[in-house]
Length: 230
Ligand SMILES: *Cc1c(COP(=O)(O)O)cnc(C)c1O
View 1 (cartoon, rainbow, N blue to C red):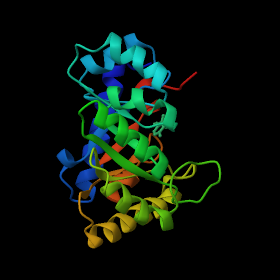
View 2: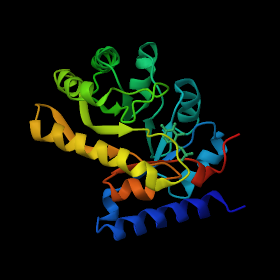
View 3: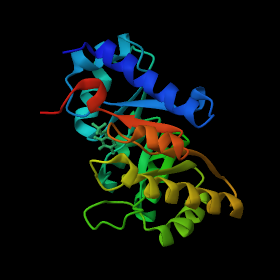
């Protein structure tokens, strides 16, 4: 099996190629290496090989890894479902939280950020496919939610995130990515105060090239870097 370094290089190459296909600047697309369930030595290996952003789904698990690797100059992002009662820890640990999907959670994050003297950067997670098993605000809720969050002084909205349904064919996911981009454009045109829509977090191992073609600025890739999760 290829080393993490080789795999990481391959993913970066694919990102670059996908960007070239659609005439985008590859520098505008950031790779979030998704390290959920990956042990700390492997995460360290990825960082040594050049990973600069790590994505984690579970607060407790992330806390242990971040503590173990805290001297390394990397950015940690939270991409999993976040419960309000974990907001306190999330604010201390993460530079960007991709998965804000309710005003209740946003208010709690704002409160904790205030206590920590921090401006917490966040993305609003949108459930584009309306799957009941997926979290995220509906498309209809998203605009209102973004506006409300814009009023919270210690949160800074940077854009949107989505988790589309899983298909074996990435082309089938394309409409969901396009829909998130359309929603971003609609929100941007309303120009709510204190709201930036520069980031679109979408695309995973199976479909990140298509996501890039549809405008992703952050792709969240786990399996292609670390191998199948056990
Ligand atoms: C696990 C996970 C990923 C990475 O998925 P892979 O298919 O392993 O690349 C991306 N985003 C979220 C929210 C995840 O939970």
